Length: 75
Image (cartoon, rainbow, N blue to C red; front, side, top):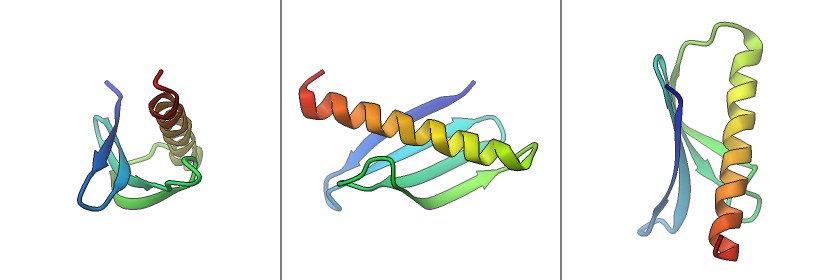
């Protein structure tokens, strides 16, 4: 079961996105100016093919952008 969370680290003043799925765990830092720009922190995953990682990263980028827009606009 896929699960994504966006959370804020107050001491670093930084947003992070966590992707969890059986066999996959990815933690990325979200750029404050451009939420679709992610920087890898932790990546533990087994991908079935070369395109799968790119698809997951794209999902994470879209999720981060949507969630940050919600925070900025107050939903």
